[in-house]
Amino acid sequence: MKGVAVYVAAALAEIAGCFAFWAWLRLDRSALWLLPGMTALAVFAWLLAQSPAVLAGRAYAAYGGVYIAASLVWLWRVEGQRPDQWDIAGAAICLAGAALILWAPRQG
Image 1 (spheres, one colour):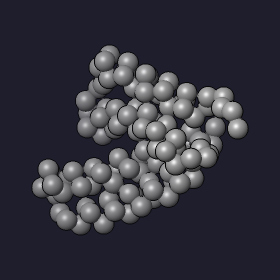
Image 2: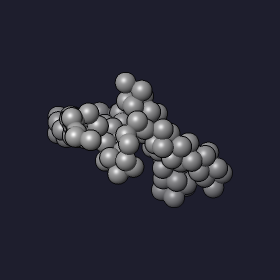
Image 3: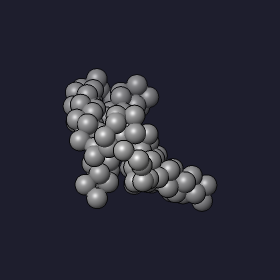
Image 4: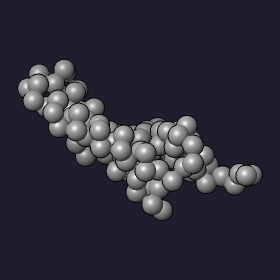
């Protein structure tokens, strides 16, 4: 379960960091938004490196599903747009894929 917490924390850090750039470029916010944004992206990279996956590619692939689900939570909670049934179905499929990548029984 440590892996799930790492992925969720990494997703929040990445989304917050990317949103800082979005706010600067698309919402005409101050360039000062970039400082916490870059810090959040550095925290994201550090967190993702804490993944229990043995290989980086699997860590990144599994993280993708968590990122998609977390992005929809951001859409709802921060941007005020409730995800629709298709968003939720897509996120569920992605999370199932992430679980398969992380916890599939592998030889060796």
